[in-house]
Structure formats: structure tokens, C-alpha cells
Image (cartoon, rainbow, N blue to C red; front, side, top):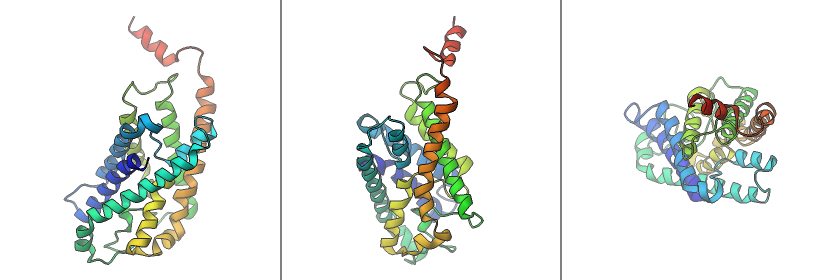
Length: 258
């Protein structure tokens, strides 16, 4: 279980590390979004046939809530997600340890011109309020779940067979491109909390929890509300209105080729 979650997180954190410490030489904000997005694609390919590739604790919670997953699997999946994320942070830390030493001289800080804590966990933009950050995460996660439901809904315009991993990865990249500047779009408790705990242990100290007006709890709590919001929106406004038989989209496609 932790192995396939470690995969997308590993690629994502690695892309951030290269951008932060490499200046303009090793990517930019777009490459971070692609790192996380394509990392999700690879994670789905690795674990999709084993567990449905549950890599997001808020997604797992929402699927249990609507009856698509047994509640007894939630703690097992959540543990795997948290452990995988922690292992990814450990791996990136040691893989880029020499680069970290060269970049900041071993002075691991959360803020300032040579801050490196943001490589591992998310932090809000200076202008973002606590309420604004909470709303940001609710909306971002709601959009994620809304689109995931559509991608996998066979009665709607679902992704073509075999393409859902890529489409889901592009969705994550799209959320980052369009909704990521406020706080780095964690939209997943397991993506943010374990690396934050690791940085507290590895030399950044407890400031990782107090920074950004005690930002740490928002990426943990708000996505849980957002996931339920996204699922309910899809069910009430889309799924409950499916026609019987094949979808109208499928019917239109069939008519167009006749």
C-alpha cells in the first residue's frame, strides 16, 4: 500500500526540490504541477488493480460515505497513505541532502529567502487568511472529487478505457495550474501532514506547525469537507439525472456515426 502512494508524492516533492534549489535551471511552477499530476498517473497504474489506487485520504473518506468502499478499509488505506507520504519525504530529503546543504548551508528554515520547508509541505501565501485558506481547500478538493466522479462515471462522458490514470493526473495538474497559488493545493491530508511531521523531526522544528497562522490543520480538515461537497454536488446535479440505459452523450455519439 505505501509503495504506490510514495510514487506520486516522490515525483511531486522531487519536482518542488528541483525548482526551489535549482533556480531557473531545473523547472518552474508548471513543472511542479506536472510532477504531481504525472506522479498521480503513475500511482494509479501501480496500485489501481490492487486497491483502486486510493492515494487521497479525503477521497477514501468520501467513497466510504457514499457506499463505494467499506468503512473497515478506511483506517487501512489511510495508514498506507500517511506512511507512503512520510517515506516519500524521507527519500527526497536524503536524495537531495547534499543539495540542501549547498543551498542553505544546513540552516533549515520555514520562511526567508532560503526557506526549504515548502519543498515538503504546503504553506499559505502571505495574503491568505485562515478563512480564505479553508475555503481554498474545500473548493479545490470539491473540484477534484467532482471531476473524479465524472471521469469514472460510465453513464456520463467517462474517460476512455485505459485512459483514466492519465486523465486523473491531468486533472491534478489542472487544479495546480488554476487553483494552486494560494497555498500550493494540498487537497489531501496525506499529502501534507506526514511530510510536515518529518520536517519537524529533521531539523526545521515546530515552526512548521505554527507558520502561516498555524496553517497545518487546514490541509488536514478542509479537504474532508471538500471531498464530501464534491461528491454530493455530483450526485445531486448529475448522477440523479442520468437517463435510463446509456448516457445521452453515448447516444449522441452513436447517432453521429450512423
